[in-house]
Length: 344
Image (cartoon, rainbow, N blue to C red; front, side, top):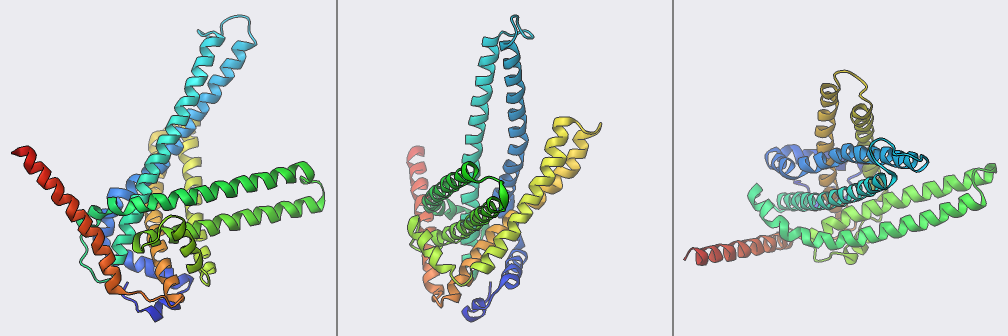
């Protein structure tokens, strides 16, 4: 990202998008390594959970149906009684809940690690620091801890937004519904407001993640800093995030219809091969879209910072990044000493 601050100030939608691709293809080797180690597993987990969740959900529905049938019958349904089916349904619910919890934990860890790696990588490029994959991955565990705090605050805000939206939509259903033109208009207004708020929070969270890595702020302070930073570039940022979201949704729909549903209903004789032909491109395309998303959020940060004439002090930024590396080297040396003591 060999750009001066004045040039970054004037970046719009297409220039920011182009710059992100330029960074990726200019440093193909290290971004490929980051992708293979973090983003490829992340996209795999994302898609496979759709498959497993669908299987567990429909197994639960089937077993609940058997439970209701056994309840309405005076004899055993199949080889199980009502009590047996009740235990099976409970087990199904626990399995689905545990799987979802495990999925969210793994996704969160991989996502934060990938964010840390990409942000550190791009900042190193910007400060003309020598970049090596081993060095990037070495400092990631130190960086991502700050991101967890920022994520928790962002997650709390999303929960509040959804609770508020649920309350408003509930009031709309009770008092208006689709009865008359006024009810339809109110629904459209509520829906647009919810979508806009969701996109806005998504932008703030993405930039706050970059701030958490490159500045001293993290958590709620990073979110407030991000809110101020994106002013004047909200339209550009929203357009980029919306475009990425469209790709996410498109890939999910294709995978859901042609892979998940195909497996459930066995639409064709050669289902496994058919699903591989569709599923593999979806996996690879989702991986690339995720990489672009991670790079975009960092470029947006630098563009917004330049737009507000906030000085991007390369030496200071380099020192900040070097502090992470120094901590990593210190931890590495401590582990080496401990290993030597054990060997003695």
